[in-house]
Every structure is written in structure tokens, then in C-alpha cells.
Image (tube, rainbow, N blue to C red):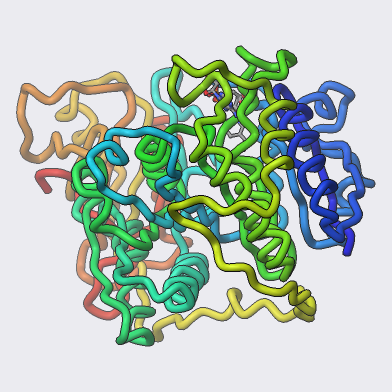
Length: 483
Ligand code: NAI
């Protein structure tokens, strides 16, 4: 079996070398094809952070084992990590957080065991990075949550929960506020839950979930979340088990899977050979299991757990009274412990059983098929306009343009209604949403909306607009706060 390996930036090459040395010492039957990916590839002029040869190799081999890759903050190139996950539709990000005996945490000291698996949706949400400056003062990020995308990741989470005999599967969300986006994700969760009656399924609002995870992490088993919330909650869980140095991650798709650590390039310690390779090693162990290399996975994991249990540590964790090991020494300690098992948490030795690859065909994309309703109608439009005027003044102008088909029903600013009613205490920015609805209850068409757009544009710069749709008697848009 051959897999693609990208060493990454920062500490990536050091920890990758440590992990592959451990694999080699255990005679893991894998061949590695090194591919060019990361910030250093961007710097050579490849706009998506990888060469076309790298892309071709990964698409042919189907497995990418990667080190962390650098992304500039606030400006500059897009994240190659996110590009890779999205390009190859690795829709489920599975992150397992377990108590590691020997890695002291508040919970290990209190005797509270942790075994939480976070499944994070990996493609959608604000990670689409579809962003625009609507005015000089107002930035917009489009957050797409789709039914097929949600169903895909949630179904994966339920399947995985069933296989591991999970005691509970929980959906984390903010559907009380984001009723359309998180509401759709939650709706999909309970739709899939019906197919798994043996699993206890429930939902928790994400802020409450964070509080509960830090107070009683042992009450959770599998948690599935949308992309951004899943990202944040999984780093929180990393903290529960000892930090980012212990957090592995698998990006699962139907054809391509990417295994990597949760942490980044750790620029502050790069090049010093002191990074902790455990997270990448745990990701590598998950990859071995994914490839059916059960025997190697169990022997390496038991050696790692034994090593940790015996107090061997890199500088970022453990008992400061014990001398820390550098990355190479830490890897060697694990190799020296092959064949040994920890007192707590030993993994059963199973024979290798290579998996036959699934026959994936891109032209069969069931996600394109939607259950659209017949009685779908346009009942209005939200016009997002740039203006520094007061709401009354804007309303007067808007009403002039409403014509015979539309009536102005509401004006809001940052989602809060400021006309026809509102509060003088609401702070305003220079972008308003003028909501127009059909005047006589008759459905509108797109030409009507464009007509209003043209008329309104005589007075305002329109930054964007959204149609207001009704599906049967269901409103397919949210109301402004206070509307
Ligand atoms: P980071 O995870 O690189 O570092 C945060 C802190 O944790 C630092 O103090 C670092 O020294 C420490 N740390 C991380 N991994 C460690 C390890 N294996 N051993 C010991 N200490 C470790 O996060 P940061 O600083 O926010 O990001 C740095 C760069 O990494 C950014 O460019 C970011 O975009 C990128 N990044 C890449 C990821 C990926 O490739 N999947 C994930 C997260 C960040």
C-alpha cells in the first residue's frame, strides 16, 4: 500500500520524521510518496499551496498523511489545510480525545476518565470563506449549511457511534439563535437519529455544551457539530486531555482521507527538535486502523501509552521534575517499548486485515438531488443598502420606490429592526436591510425584484439582496430582531 505524505511547515518535518521512524521500526507495510504542499509551496508561486503533481498523487492514492501547514492570519493566501479538506470532500472531521495515563490533567487527577469523539462538519459553514466588504465598515461572511452536507456528516457520526457501541450521541448547535442554518443541521440530526433507535441521541446548545464538557466530560461520548463550532469545541476537548500535543484528527471522505494532528505549525518551537509528536502519531495510528493495519496500530499505540505512563515526556507536558526528551529521543523511547503494554488503557492486539478500497464514482453525486417543494413562492426581498442616513429618511425614500408590487415592511441594522418601530438606543452602522414584501399577497417573480433593484439603485448603493421565499406555509427566511 502506498500513501501520500506531506511533511508540512514549522514543526511538521520534525514530528513527521519521528512518526515515520516509529512506523519503520515496527515494519509497517506502507510505501510513502512525498508530496509538495504547504506555505513553502505557496511561496514558490503555487496559489493553492500544492503542486499539480501533489494533487494528482493524492487523488490517485486516496490517503494523505500530513504535517501542519501555515496560514497567514487576517490577510494573504487561503489555508491549504482547508483547501485540501474541501477540494477532496473530506466531509467528516473525527477527533478522538481520551485520557492518556501519564498525561496529568485536572480530570485525570480527579479520577474522571474522558473518552469523547468530536465529529465536525468539514466543508461548509463560514469555512467557505465567502466574504465581502459590503461597505468600508461592514464585512459579510456567508454561512452555508446544506441539507445533503449535514446529512452526510451526521450519518457518518451515527455509523461510527454504532460501531463503537457509543452510549450517547449529541448534536451541538446554536439553533435557538440561527434558526435556519443551525436549525437545518439539528433537523437533519433528528432525521438520521430515527434510523438508529438503539443509540441515545440528544442535543445541547453549544455554549451550554462547552460548560458541560469542562465540568462533566465523562457524560459525553460522540458529539457532532457544524464546522466552526466543532473546531472550537474540539480544541476545548484537547485542553481536557492535556493540550494540543495529544489531539489527533482524521478527515474522512468517500474517496480521499487526510490524517493530521489538530495543532498547527508551532512556529515558536520550530526547528528545535523539541515538539511533541504524540498528536501526529495518534493520527497515524488512526490511519493504520483505517487501512486495516490493526496489528501495527495496537503495538505502536500500546508502546506510546506505556511510554507516557512511565513519565517519559517532551517539554510541553508532564512532571517538570522529570527531564524532558527531545522529539527524536521521545520517538526512540516509544520504539524501545514495542511489545510492552500500559497498565491502563491497553489496546487489544488484532491481526492486520487490509481493507479493499471502495469504488467511488464522482459522476454519481446524490447530493445534487433535492426534495424541492412544489408550492414555493417569492414573497419579498431583502435589499442590503449602504447609507449613513437615519432610518426614517431611508424609509421615506424606500417607500417611494416600492411601486405597485411591493410594500416596505421593515428596516433593520445589524439584524435589529429600527423601522417602523425600534429604539433610539440601537447603535447604527452604515448598512441597512430594507425588507420589501408583496403588496397584495400575490407571489412575485425575479423580474419584479430586479425592477425594484433598478428603481432603488437610483437612490442607494445596494450591496446585496436576498429573495424572501415561502415554502407552503413555511417562511424560508428569518425575521429581524424585534420584527
Ligand atoms: P499552534 O497549534 O501551532 O501552536 C499553539 C501553541 O501550542 C504554541 O505555543 C505551540 O508551541 C504549541 N504546540 C502546538 N503543537 C505542539 C506540539 N506538537 N508540541 C509542543 N507544543 C506544541 O497554533 P497557532 O500558533 O495558532 O498556529 C500556527 C500556524 O499553524 C498558523 O499558521 C495556523 O494557521 C497553522 N495551523 C495549521 C493547522 C493544520 O495544519 N491543520 C491547524 C492549526 C493551525
